[in-house]
Length: 123
Image (cartoon, rainbow, N blue to C red; front, side, top):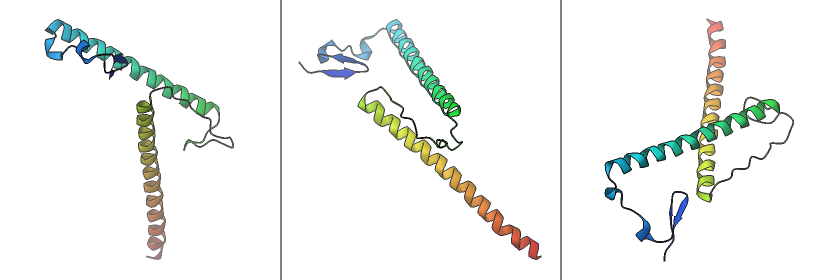
Protein backbone atom coordinates (compact mmCIF):
# COMPACT_ATOMS: atom_id res chain seq x y z
CA UNK A 1 0.00 0.00 0.00
CA UNK A 2 1.46 3.36 -1.02
CA UNK A 3 0.85 6.55 0.92
CA UNK A 4 -0.24 9.57 -1.05
CA UNK A 5 -0.57 13.04 0.43
CA UNK A 6 -3.70 14.86 -0.72
CA UNK A 7 -3.96 18.31 0.80
CA UNK A 8 -3.56 17.82 4.55
CA UNK A 9 -4.78 14.22 4.49
CA UNK A 10 -2.73 11.16 3.84
CA UNK A 11 -4.50 8.62 1.69
CA UNK A 12 -3.27 5.10 2.28
CA UNK A 13 -4.18 3.75 -1.12
CA UNK A 14 -4.76 5.43 -4.46
CA UNK A 15 -7.89 3.30 -4.88
CA UNK A 16 -9.49 5.38 -2.10
CA UNK A 17 -9.29 8.52 -4.26
CA UNK A 18 -12.40 9.44 -6.22
CA UNK A 19 -11.84 10.81 -9.70
CA UNK A 20 -13.14 14.35 -10.13
CA UNK A 21 -15.20 13.37 -13.17
CA UNK A 22 -17.11 10.87 -10.99
CA UNK A 23 -18.70 13.70 -8.97
CA UNK A 24 -22.11 14.92 -9.92
CA UNK A 25 -22.69 18.67 -10.20
CA UNK A 26 -23.99 19.04 -6.64
CA UNK A 27 -20.98 17.22 -5.17
CA UNK A 28 -18.64 19.23 -7.35
CA UNK A 29 -20.20 22.53 -6.23
CA UNK A 30 -20.02 21.39 -2.59
CA UNK A 31 -16.34 20.53 -2.96
CA UNK A 32 -15.61 23.93 -4.52
CA UNK A 33 -17.41 25.70 -1.64
CA UNK A 34 -15.51 23.69 0.95
CA UNK A 35 -12.20 24.46 -0.76
CA UNK A 36 -13.05 28.15 -1.07
CA UNK A 37 -14.02 28.30 2.59
CA UNK A 38 -10.79 26.62 3.64
CA UNK A 39 -8.70 28.93 1.45
CA UNK A 40 -10.53 31.93 2.87
CA UNK A 41 -9.87 30.77 6.41
CA UNK A 42 -6.18 30.25 5.66
CA UNK A 43 -5.94 33.71 4.07
CA UNK A 44 -7.69 35.36 7.03
CA UNK A 45 -5.34 33.60 9.45
CA UNK A 46 -2.32 34.78 7.44
CA UNK A 47 -3.58 38.37 7.39
CA UNK A 48 -4.20 38.23 11.15
CA UNK A 49 -0.70 36.88 11.72
CA UNK A 50 0.79 39.65 9.57
CA UNK A 51 -1.18 42.27 11.49
CA UNK A 52 -0.01 40.79 14.79
CA UNK A 53 3.62 40.89 13.64
CA UNK A 54 3.20 44.48 12.45
CA UNK A 55 1.71 45.51 15.79
CA UNK A 56 4.54 43.79 17.66
CA UNK A 57 7.10 45.59 15.50
CA UNK A 58 5.45 48.94 16.12
CA UNK A 59 5.21 48.24 19.83
CA UNK A 60 8.87 47.22 20.04
CA UNK A 61 10.05 50.45 18.40
CA UNK A 62 11.30 49.06 15.12
CA UNK A 63 12.28 51.50 12.42
CA UNK A 64 10.30 51.85 9.20
CA UNK A 65 12.73 49.64 7.28
CA UNK A 66 11.84 46.80 9.64
CA UNK A 67 15.15 46.89 11.48
CA UNK A 68 14.97 46.70 15.25
CA UNK A 69 15.68 49.93 17.05
CA UNK A 70 18.65 49.10 19.34
CA UNK A 71 17.32 45.61 19.96
CA UNK A 72 17.95 42.20 18.52
CA UNK A 73 15.45 40.97 15.98
CA UNK A 74 12.90 38.67 17.54
CA UNK A 75 12.47 35.21 16.12
CA UNK A 76 9.17 34.39 14.47
CA UNK A 77 8.26 30.74 14.50
CA UNK A 78 6.21 29.44 11.61
CA UNK A 79 4.42 26.18 12.10
CA UNK A 80 3.97 24.41 8.84
CA UNK A 81 5.32 21.73 6.60
CA UNK A 82 8.77 21.97 5.06
CA UNK A 83 7.14 22.85 1.75
CA UNK A 84 5.13 25.68 3.36
CA UNK A 85 8.23 26.97 5.14
CA UNK A 86 10.18 26.98 1.88
CA UNK A 87 7.33 28.90 0.22
CA UNK A 88 7.26 31.41 3.08
CA UNK A 89 11.02 31.95 2.82
CA UNK A 90 10.70 32.51 -0.93
CA UNK A 91 7.88 35.04 -0.42
CA UNK A 92 9.93 36.87 2.21
CA UNK A 93 12.98 36.95 -0.04
CA UNK A 94 10.96 38.35 -2.93
CA UNK A 95 9.45 41.03 -0.66
CA UNK A 96 12.85 41.98 0.78
CA UNK A 97 14.24 42.27 -2.73
CA UNK A 98 11.33 44.44 -3.76
CA UNK A 99 11.86 46.76 -0.78
CA UNK A 100 15.61 46.93 -1.41
CA UNK A 101 15.10 47.78 -5.10
CA UNK A 102 12.62 50.50 -4.15
CA UNK A 103 15.05 51.98 -1.62
CA UNK A 104 17.88 51.93 -4.16
CA UNK A 105 15.68 53.60 -6.78
CA UNK A 106 14.83 56.35 -4.26
CA UNK A 107 18.52 56.83 -3.42
CA UNK A 108 19.42 57.01 -7.14
CA UNK A 109 16.66 59.54 -7.76
CA UNK A 110 17.88 61.65 -4.84
CA UNK A 111 21.47 61.48 -6.13
CA UNK A 112 20.39 62.50 -9.63
CA UNK A 113 18.37 65.36 -8.19
CA UNK A 114 21.33 66.44 -6.05
CA UNK A 115 23.63 66.39 -9.10
CA UNK A 116 21.14 68.40 -11.17
CA UNK A 117 20.79 71.18 -8.58
CA UNK A 118 24.36 72.57 -8.77
CA UNK A 119 24.13 72.70 -12.58
CA UNK A 120 21.01 74.82 -12.40
CA UNK A 121 22.69 77.31 -10.04
CA UNK A 122 25.57 77.86 -12.51
CA UNK A 123 23.18 79.22 -15.20
